[in-house]
Image (cartoon, rainbow, N blue to C red; front, top):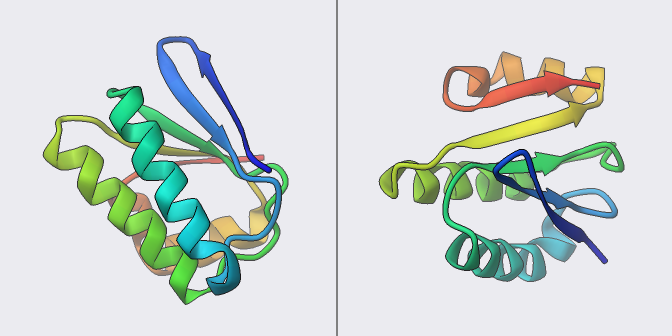
Length: 101
């Protein structure tokens, strides 16, 4: 299960495993709840995530779009270097902040 905490004026969402199609619906629902309950910057702590598939990438982009429409922003923190390379190759670092582990 994920952990959610408030830290430095932002909500931190910590998934406990990979962000892949099999868990995307549950995570999408939980992220919606978090964004509704805690408007403002959202950080997703990827310390425990080693793999993100195309569905997971779509989920992150959707979260970014939802936050951007509301004036918020998405931050990915503790990103594994391999994942960081993938996200940068896809130019997602141009849309949201990515902090390497």
